[in-house]
Image (cartoon, rainbow, N blue to C red; front, side, top):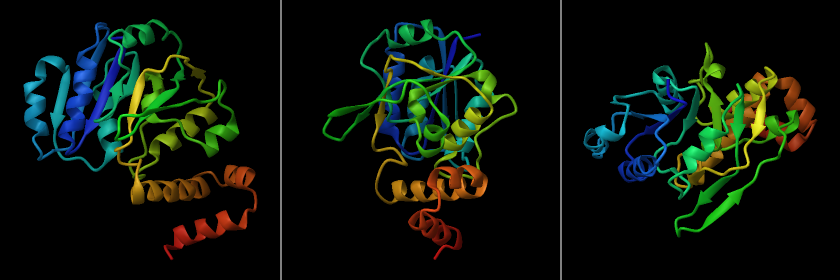
Length: 246
C-alpha cells in the first residue's frame, strides 16, 4: 500500500493539468500513487494523459456529473493510507522533497491541514495561515482550501462528498468530520500552491459558491446557523432570497 494517494481532477484545463502532473512527477519521494480523473476533456487533455501514462498509477477520461462526482471516483480508486486532492492547475511547493517531508509526518488517523500559498496571474504568491486548532465556530463559518488538507483514508469509509452540492461539498465534508469528532491536526509545512483560476475562485462562480454555502448551512445545519449567525436580518434575508430564488 502506498503511504499517500494524490488525486487530480480535471476538465478542459490541459495547461493546468500539465502544470500539476509535472509538479508531482518532479518529486524525488515515490511513496505515493498518482490518480487523475478527467471529465472527458475535449481540449487535448485525454491525449496528454496518454502521453503521461508512465507518471500515473491510474487515469480515466469519461464524463462525470461534476467536481465531487470526480473526486468520489478518485476515492474509490485510491489505495493509499492518506489522500490529497491536488486539482488541475494546483501544484506542489517548489521543492522536490516536499512530499518526503510531508509523508514522514503522517502518522495518525486524522485530517491534517497546512498553510497554503495562493498564486495570482502575475506569479505573485500569498501565504494563507489557518488556526493551530480548529474549533466549532471556525469549522462552521470558514473553509480550509481542499489542497491544504490531507485525509486519512478511513474518513472516507462509507462516506463520500455530497454530489448534490456543486461548489462547497468539501466545506460540508470538513464540518461533518469535525462534528463526528475526527481529529484535525495542524501541519506546519506548506506543501501546495492553489491556482486562483480554479472553479470557485473567481467572479460569478465565487459568488454562487458563497450563496450555496449559506443555503447548505441553513438547511442542513440550522442549529449552528442560528448559533453563529444569530438573528442577523441581513443574512436571513439573503438566505430566504437564495432558497426562494428571488
